[in-house]
Structures are given as C-alpha cells and as structure tokens.
Image 1 (spheres, rainbow, N blue to C red):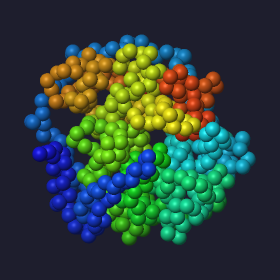
Image 2: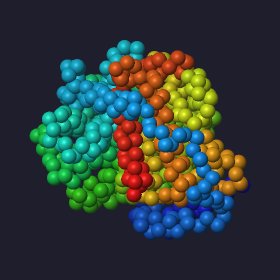
Image 3: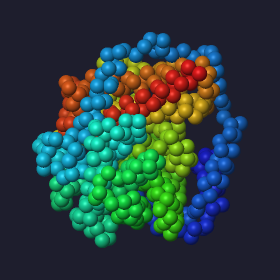
Image 4: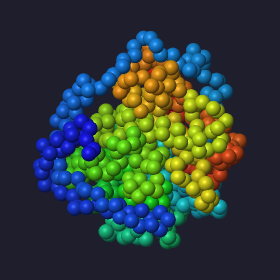
Length: 574
C-alpha cells in the first residue's frame, strides 16, 4: 500500500474544504495518448474535483504545516564543517567575463536580426514574424513558431525592464518596434484558418507554426500544440504591465489602445486556454500527443496573468471564469496529472510515456516550464504556481539530467568530476540529431537553461533571505561542490541564511552555474554563432543555424547571472 505524504494530505484536505464553492466541474476522464512510433495507447486519469479560491487561507495552512519538522531528521550547518571545492577567493577569469558580455550582445543582436521588419537580412519575412532560424534546407526551420516567437519577444520585454533608464536611446526604438510588430502580427495569425482549426471556433489558435510571410502552414505536423496561446498571453501581459507601470503608451498606431489588445488578442487566447486546458496536445518538442508539464504550467501562469489583466479592465464575468479554470488546472497539476510521483524525486514531463515504459520522464522541458511559469520577483507565484526553483523536485530534475548526460554524451567524459557543468540535451531517450533520427545531442537551449535555473535559485535565496534547504536525494550532488557527506544520516540539511556554510555553498553554486556557460563558450562558433545542437562526440555544431531560441536562452541565463551576482554582492557587503 502506498501512503500519501503530509503535503498531499494537506492539499487534498484544503480542496475538500473549498469544494463546490464555484460549481465548476471538470470532464469525467482525461485520455492521454502518445503517438510516438505510431503506438496509440490510452492512459485514463481521474479529473480534479470541483474546487474554489481562498488562496490566502490555503497559503496560511500550508505555511503552518511546512513548519512541522518533528518527523524529519535534520542537520543544521552554521559556521563550520563546510568547505568549497572551488577557490572562492580567486576572481573569475577576465577573459571569460569579457566573452560573456560580448556573447550576450551578439545574442541579443541576433534575436533582433531574426524579427521581420527589425532585422535587415530577410525581405520576405512579415513584420513582427520571428523566424526560428534562417536555415532553409537540412533542416528547414525557416518558419515562425508560436512558442518560439512568444519566448523570444519575452526577452525583449525583459530588456526594456532592465534598461528603463535608457528608454529614450535610439537603439531602443528597434526593441519597441520588434515587440509591437510581433503583437500586430499575432493579431493577424490568430485569424488565419489552418489545419488545427478555424478562427471562429478558436481552434486555430493551437496551430504551432506559420510561414514566414504569415500565411498558413499546410503540411503534416504535430498539431495542435496548446502552449502557444499561453506563452503569448504571458509575453503580452508583461509588456502591457511594463507600459502601464511606466506611464507609456503603444508606439505603433495599428495597436490602437490597451483595450484593443486586451479584447482582440488576449481574450481569444485566454478563451482558448479555458476551452482546451484539459485536452491532449503535442509537446514543446512536437513529438508526443498527450498532456505535458511544460504546457500545463505555462497555461496556469497565463491564466494568472489573465486574471490580473481582466481585473484592470473591469471584466468581472470573464475574470470569474478565468479563476475557476485556474483552480481546476492547478488541482490537475498537483493531484491528477502525474507530473510529480512518489517513486522518483524529479519532475515528469509527460507521464503517459513513463506509464507506458517508453521514457523515464526526465526532460529539460520541465525546467523550461519552471522558468517560463514563474516571475521570481512576484512572491505570490511561489504559492500560486507549483514547481518554482525553490521546489526540491526542480533541482532534483536538473541533477538527474546531469547525472544521466554526464555519461551519455562522450564530450562530457573529458572532465572526470561532477563539480563542473556538462553539456545537456533535451531528454535521455532523444534520437533527433538536428537533421534526422539517429542519436540525440546536447542543445544550447538545454545547457543554458541549467545555468539559469541555478542563478534563479541563488537570486531568490539572497533576495528573500531564505535558508538553503538540501533534501536527502540531493546530498550526492552537493557533495561534489562542497564537502558535504552524501551518506550522512539525515533527511534534510539546513544552512541558515547568512551563515558561513550558506555563503560558501551558494557561492559554490554560482561557480557551478558558470561552468554550464563555460561549456557553451567551448562549443559556439567563431563570432558567437549558435546552432540548435552540438555533436555529442566531437562538439561541433549541428542542426539549424543561428537558432533564435538558442540566442534567447543564452541571453536570459547571462541576464540572471548578473541579477544573482548583484544580490549576492549586496548581502556580502552589508
């Protein structure tokens, strides 16, 4: 017999207390199928029960419960016993630092170059269309993907947030143009009937990609993909909030007004999410028709942003529907999805594949979901959205990927220790080599994501003054960067914020995060160009050239490196 953890009991009891307050009910079953290798076998899952809001009450009860540690064996390090394997007093290599800045600039310029109407190379690209890659043959990535475009434009919004004091500079006009052209192009793409469906039913919003001239892509593909509308909502709401917070207006007359964007672009996407959150779709790698953590978690974040923006526009009835859907989806993620299992410490990206014995469940997409679904400067996201970087399952997912790919990819064998970052790929069973099906390789996106997750964690710990809590399943990893005994008889190790043990361990984490960027440094082409992948045997780049998402992932990782180092320096100097 399997017993529930106290956390699961708490979640279920909380939901029972709130049962039926909204009258919302979910479908009677979910059917998850996988199309991989043409093997369609259903996996039936129970739906979430009817539940409601009262998040403040839930949060208070959860906080009280989390403080009850009497059933755990806990060891607390303070000012002794811990030493780093790194020379923490030695300054980071200046050559590496200068490369980071140069590569960051090149990556951002490459992002702009791949946006129609902003870049100068591609005359056949519609204004605001974000091309995945200029590669037109072997492989052909010369399309605009809804997912890639939303994630890319999100980096532009973050660039504006980071450079608010330079907002009047001439170069900023290209950034504003890129964002607002993308928004106008999104309006046009939404209304194009395609093989995923029609505009009038909103089914067409699940279409994963379009031609670069913003016409429909009419060939066979893994469709629908349901994460696109959610990612677009996240990007657009973040941009609108940035403008409103700084008393700015749209610079493009075609967007007309904030109300126009809300009514004509955001509401259709949000309506699509409410209609389809509990239906199968293809994953972010476009291979498996099922339900996926990346999709569910980013849709949940989109719903939360949608609730806030609908309140700003006094759209009460629509806001109520968004709240009901948010709670239903959140319950599904926590209870019925299988994204978190008692049998493994890591997150499971596509549970149906695990149940069918086709994959182990590890996938860099789960870490991408964590990054895309959480605004770590918004404390409420840690409560409202599951699996933030502080959740032990997130780091366990990263460490499990490292542990697998350290041995899976021969280029990682050169360094015989676990104290340095390694080249990471998408998932252990991957067989896509960038051109066809043979053997999977490391990806720039995956390797940069590992670094960004660690920088996010360090930023949160220092910004909020949180203790570093290390669960037992992570002892082995931490023993590779500090002298923690992996066999110690404790369920958990706590390093109090500001203690010598805390500082040495988190500074070691910073060095470890940097080592993933050093892997990228080793494999980028001369001049800073990044393709999709690099060969697992010889390290040379493969797949689509100048991949926009590769540049965006690197830029974002370096951005969070700067933010993490800033808060660390602030604490250490105080």
